[in-house]
Amino acid sequence: MRLFLDTANVEHIRHGVRLGVVTGVTTNPSLVSKEGKVDYKRLVQEICSIVPGPVSTEVLSQDVNGMVAEARELAKWAKNVVVKIPATIEGVEATHQLARENIKVNFTLCFSVNQALLAALAGAAYVSPFVGRLDDIGEYGMGLVKDIVEVYQKYPYIKTEVIAASIRHPRHCVEAAQLGAHIATVPYQVLVQMIKHPLTDVGVVRFLEDWEKVMGKGKRL
Image (cartoon, rainbow, N blue to C red; front, side, top):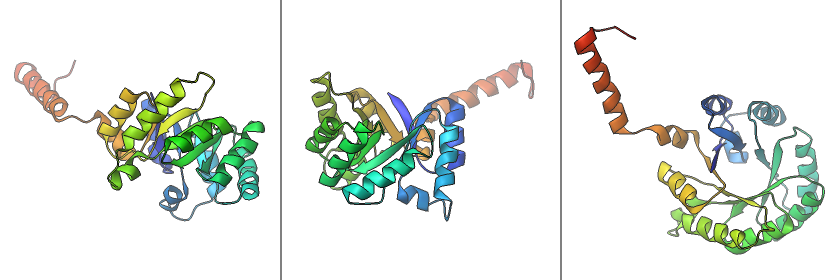
């Protein structure tokens, strides 16, 4: 399973790429707004220059023609731009048009297997089931990821990749990997939490203390 960062924060993205574990980015208007007033095009292009893989950025139009027009413009910004299209009936049609033009689509705000199936049939490169938002209303978000993965695996002609989105904690990442999601897109905080473990911290301190007892404080190899 690959890891994307779900953010528009350039410094967090740089760090994730330096770690060698982040291969893509997903953004949306809410994430961009957290960065304050920015030149949106310049921000996306900067992110695209940092990240080796796909960078998803979202259209704002709700009608087919508007979505397609926005997507065409976004796709010109960088070679690794992927356009996020919402899981609506208009979104399905827009996805189909864009796929025929070889513009990659991330079919976003997906909350059902039916939506994911239509996304695949329309030619979406990615589909993003929103795990955390389903959990928020008492449903099992990872159950949707499981169902989509299982359906896709039955049909080898489906090339759409599943992005487990709206990730809230490291356990979500474990479950996404276990269920066969191609990608999990995670907030920076969750990425950092994935490496943390109290026993690791205790072990590092203990090894250092034992070394200093024998070799003296401040001695290194």
